[in-house]
Every structure is written in C-alpha cells, then in structure tokens.
Length: 286
Ligand SMILES: C[S@@+](CC[C@H](N)C(=O)[O-])C[C@H]1O[C@@H](n2cnc3c(N)ncnc32)[C@H](O)[C@@H]1O
Image 1 (cartoon, rainbow, N blue to C red):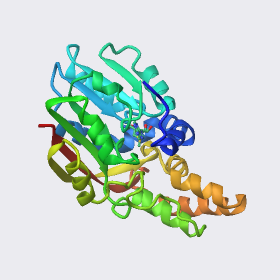
Image 2: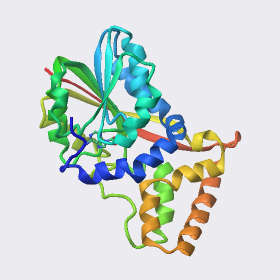
Image 3: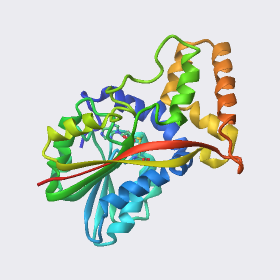
Image 4: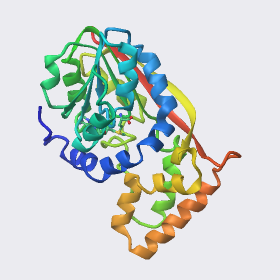
C-alpha cells in the first residue's frame, strides 16, 4: 500500500498538511455540519449485517464507524484515504473496533484494494478530489464483487451552498486571485454538475447511476456560535489561499468582513446556520 500518488500529488500534500490538520482539529465541527448528509447517503447505501464495505476518502472515520455498526461483527469496513494525517486520527478513534481497518492509499491509482471483494462502496465528500475521476471509479470498481453497490454524497454548486460561497465572495473582494478551484477541477465542487457525474460514471464499470438532490440546514462551528463558525470558515482552502495572497492588515479586514456576514446567519438558538445542497449518487457494478 503506497502513500505516494503522482496523479494526485497536490491533493495528497494538501490533505496531509494544512487541509488535513484543519479537518482533524475541527472534526467535531465538520461532523456536526455534515451529519444529515452522511446519514442520507448511508440510508441509500443500506449496508447490511455481514457485508464488507469500502469507505473512500474516509478522513477521520466518522462514516467508517457508523458503517461498522451497520455491518456488525460478521462484516467489516476498510477506510481508505490518501492522507496519513487523516488515517492517524481515524486509527486513534477506532482502536477499540475489531471490524474496522485502514489503508493509506490513493483510491485512483493504488491497486491494494483489489485484494478485497467488497459488497459496497461509500463516500461522504471523499470522491471529488481525483485528477482522473473515471480512472478512480474504475479502480474502485475493481475492488467490488459483481452486484456490489456504490453510494456517495457530494456538494451541489458553490452557489447552492452559501456556507462556502458567502465567505468566498467576501474573500474575493480582498484579492484579484480566485480563492477556490475552478469548477471541474479537483475540489469540493468538482461534482456540482450532475451531467458531469453521469458522464464520469458512464466511462467506468458502474451502471444504473441515480443522482438525487438532497437539502438540509447545516450549522457551522458545531452550532456553538459566531466565533467557532468564523474559525471553521477561516480554515477552509479559500481562506488559506487568501492568507497567502494578501498582507496581514488586509487579511484582518477580511476576517472582520466574514464575521459580519456570518452574524447575519445567527438563528434564535445562537447557531450560525445555512442551507446546504448535495447530490446523493448511487450505482451498481453489474
Ligand atoms: C472533505 S474530506 C472528507 C473526509 C470524510 N469522508 C468525512 O466526511 O469526514 C475528503 C477526504 O478525501 C481524501 N482524499 C482526497 N483525495 C483522495 C484520493 N485520491 N484517494 C483517497 N482519499 C482521498 C482526503 O484526504 C480527505 O480525507
């Protein structure tokens, strides 16, 4: 099993360094924010007792743990992630679980997964970062038995997700440089266009693709108020990009501007809330 990936070297670097450290530090906030979306994707996956499941881009293993409970002691879950930073945190969280294991691997290129014959593949926001998505889903399919299932959740467009488009818009007003990757580039919004998802999967062994919109209100900063929400916003890739592009004084003004916008999204309970919009994607390997 290799941790190096030439195809996805930039993503591997990001998720092992600043991106991974941010995700691990804010794990509870991300889990609070993403719980409804992950639960809906797991409902569609419908993992059953005794099944063997692959969790792609498993991160700190929140979905891996939930699926391990669904498959029970006669089943198993392998969490695969390109980032040793994420897998280290995942291993700590799951030390007591006997039906969970991990692989530090690039799901696009590493063939270690093919030693398995998984019944199902799952991902919560872990499949939008491949340089060659069709190659990745083909490689993943090779690790799945005939009749095996795929279910994942990914973001709809940036515009449909103001929890990120709002801070990104504010940050763009402080720099002429784009602060998020362009649409279709590896990144959180690479699968915003359902026609693109359809075309990517059509070029793989996966068949019977369904792409269903799902919406839920999400809370930033663990629902704990303005400053935790600001901290989560300013840890994103967009904010990190801005930090590299502007001087200290400009960055401080950008933080104040994002804080002011977030304050407009405080609800009666003191949580910063936004609408969230995702696609729930499923397919079957014939
Ligand atoms: C947005 S995080 C989601 C983490 C986790 N699924 C969750 O919901 O908490 C994306 C994850 O995908 C992983 N990832 C990115 N590219 C990958 C690749 N080529 N192979 C395996 N994992 C990858 C990252 O390291 C990161 O942990």
